Image (tube, rainbow, N blue to C red; front, side, top):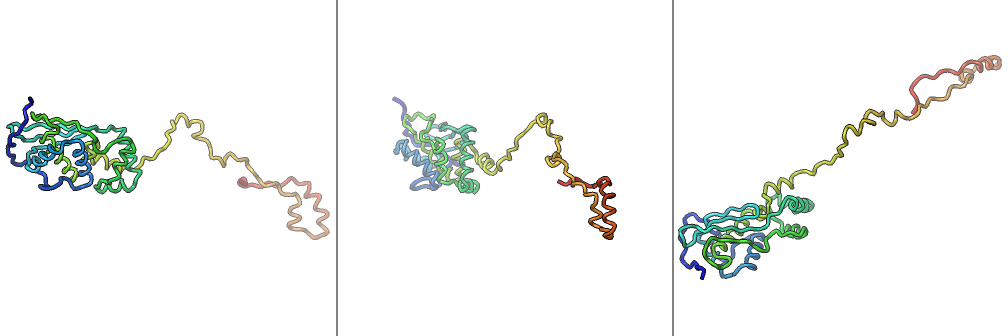
Length: 260
């Protein structure tokens, strides 16, 4: 029969203690949401013993990274027990879709940039077929206790929830996106898209003149030969004699730019 560790834990100096020494652990909506998941999937009696361990400070360390939590918990044996808690960390393609969906909602983006976790962010994940909070946990402890989760795992889970109170971005970091990565993505301006046309493809029209230079040149019609006679008429008796002479003159030349 597997050994069941019923001994009193070795007292720890300087361990991580839960701030809340009575009642529920976790005060923010996101930490409570995580605890709701725990209480749904874990044995309530073992969670209760885990809270006692968390409040006594039996947890020595907790390290969170993408998809993984590692911890050390002091039990009744001299060597601390080693804890691992695994969830799925999302890849770059999934996070690109998440960030695009968040950026499309100005309120969500503003709250995250202000260091807040909007409750609606769960809907962003679910709309993409993803979970923000894990619906199951892959957990292991090196202790000989056969129960699941053991009190050592339960203590770490409660302290993990309390750490989410301090920094909501740890929830996202566990899923694979750190605070700096997410906020950097949300702060970055949308890139200006410009079609890149190879220079070789533009050789045929690169030096082409503007459209106005291709228009046909227009010049005014030549003036009538007897225009001067009409503008500056001579005495009446001379007009009749001068008109035939003017009509035989070549038309005057008009210099100047073409009329567009």
